[in-house]
Length: 227
Image (cartoon, rainbow, N blue to C red; front, side, top):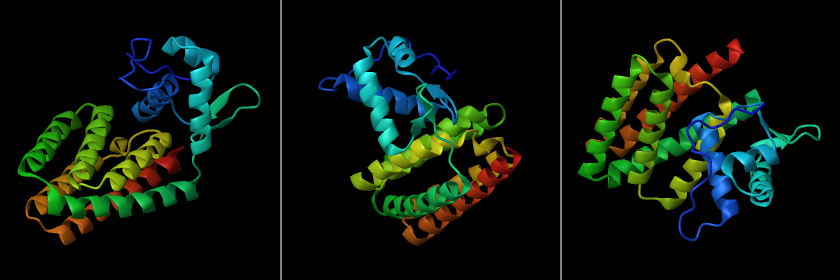
């Protein structure tokens, strides 16, 4: 049975002007990003509708959108299951992530405000505090770090594409911060990226960000070899 997203409080909240189907879709995407649903988990209309306290119609619409994006696939007439990416897809995903993260860091070096750079340092400080005990919290803070760089890049299209890429990354399962030594090396990489952005060195920021993603891929492949 699919994992239930923790502490959702049951029904979903809709902002002004947000259709119910869109709200359900966002809720399911957030559950994927949070790791509440993992590759191989089953999603059934009735169960999702009961959990979110909505009818099955908006759930059917939301699941259809997830299927169209390739996040879920049919499960032999018994609902849908969250997809498991094969190795070629993982390599393609990280190749695109390297390009996008590099571009975001370069643009952030050009556009980030002092306040945004200080915020990156604050996120990284929290990351270090979480490193000793909580890989899941590190993964959450890592997402926040990369999202903050993307916002500072001042490019809405890059930001939107990066958010969709994060949905795909959520399908990969356990965070790479479970790999021995990865929290420490990631911290060093993050610090170097921040300082390059603060120095307005776009070339260096891009190079460091791309190297950071290549190291993340190396750790991801380690995890996949153990599965």
